Amino acid sequence: MIWGPVTEVIIGDGESFEAALRRFNKKIQQAGILAEARRREFYERPAAKRKRKEAKRRKR
Image (cartoon, rainbow, N blue to C red; front, side, top):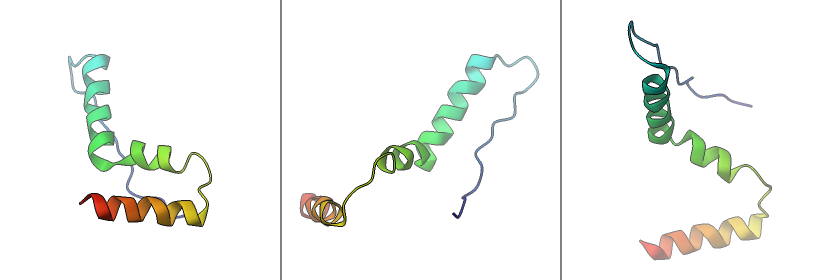
């Protein structure tokens, strides 16, 4: 399995854990890691994958 770049947040002096967690969540969202994990959570049949991609293409 190929792993991408690791997302990390360095907590600054005087920064609260909650603020660092918000920054981390924002980075995860921007990188699309969470969406990718949700997409890979369950096996998707090849036919269903083609159907989803076709619907996405038509939506544009």
